Amino acid sequence: MNEFDDTKHRLLETAGMVFAEKGYRAATVREICQRAGVNLAAVNYHFGDKQRLYIESVKRAHFCRGQQIPRPEWPAGTPAETKLRDVIGAVLARMLSAPDQAWQGQLMLRELQHPTAACMELVRDYMRPQFELIMALLRELLSEQVDENRLRLIAFGIVGQCLHFRLGRPVMSLLTPPEEYRRYQPDYLADHIADWTLAAIEGLRARADHGGPVATGSGGGR
Amino acid sequence: MNEFDDTKHRLLETAGMVFAEKGYRAATVREICQRAGVNLAAVNYHFGDKQRLYIESVKRAHFCRGQQIPRPEWPAGTPAETKLRDVIGAVLARMLSAPDQAWQGQLMLRELQHPTAACMELVRDYMRPQFELIMALLRELLSEQVDENRLRLIAFGIVGQCLHFRLGRPVMSLLTPPEEYRRYQPDYLADHIADWTLAAIEGLRARADHGGPVATGSGGGR
DNA sequence: TATTGATTCAAACAGTTGTTTGAAATGGCT
DNA sequence: AGCCATTTCAAACAACTGTTTGAATCAATA
Image (cartoon, rainbow over all chains, first blue to last red; front, side):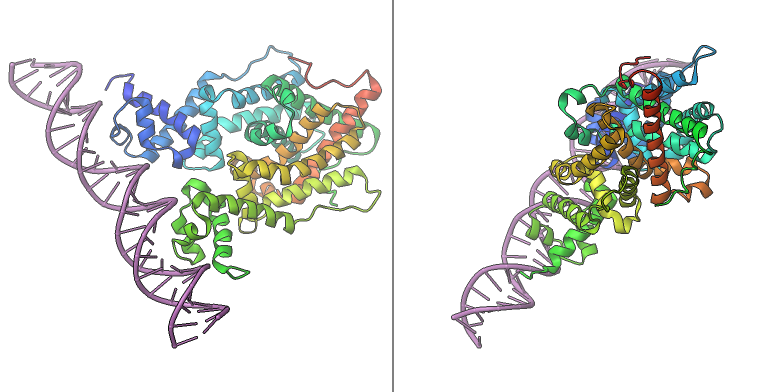
């Protein structure tokens, strides 16, 4: 067993790409093996069956992702506004990069929408830290003007907007003029989302200054 | 050929549910026929092949959806804020209803993420009008303070937040305390999203009043 | 009733799927 | 070289897929 174990390695890598591209069901072990340049039986020899190959490739995608893009670090005194923009930009960059560089992200997205065994692990190690970071920044920016539950809704909203620019691409390309749609790159979108979020925060502050306390965000009803 | 054409009807209905549940590839004509209580050959007899059954079931889901939930109408003079809240609530209600009532929505979501032939039709007849309505409301609320491109980004953001509360459910249920997650119902979420959007609009207005013109939303850079 | 056309049915078909098998090849070891 | 465990390979297997077929059934008409 070579340390770099060529076939096992290539199999994992290729499987991740094919699974990301076609989904678990539509991806065939034959295509994976052919693309990886290994024999058909290699999957069963090295991983037992297709499902375990899938799980392993998800885990590996997760692992590679964590190594490729280190947690962002800022010099002390960096304003929370800047940090927020950077985090949003990083999330978007990870989501929108070309598929041949970002099959890991796509594979993880698939997993998160149709959870299998690897999902909880993925959330614990990967999603939650990212999410807590956004929560912390929002907490700082809103300085205790809203409670934890609302903070979570706001954070989900930010993530949701980013996600939409990934998952909704087919539809958005039909709803947006081509020359504008061509500008939908991570930086452009991150600037917008961050700016929009900060505008909302300023709006809440203004409310607090002018009138009474800030609305709780749910009591309103119709 | 009966006007209600029992088998064809039941086939369409059942196919929609199964396709929504399992996706095109994983859904088998055998299961569809069995669940519908019709013979295996009925699919090919009535629809030609599996793919055309799929397309027809997507179209039908779209059609039923349109009939079930009529476009909202407001009395003259209803403030745009209220309309916005209602539209968001309607979108969320459509997305979050139980799967056995909402297989149409789930099927359409699948189609929009992995577009086939029916996608463009779906966007034209269903998504675009909804989207234009949101755009019009935002245009009214922001009263020409921002250009059309930014308006579109804001509208995408609203839709994206709604979508996330549907697609991201597995992850959110892991990131949210159960007693809070239980409150994630259409009205609760719509109140938050509408309120947050209005806060952002107020924030933009405040900026315009205080200082110079509003940021374009993209030029900022890092 | 006999005839006709549309519909249903059980059975089979051809192709693809994941998996298994047993022989061949590989590479390090004494 | 000879031996060994590990890995590769072509071939086959069994199960499942969408689709076709030809006879059986049904409903209406003349």
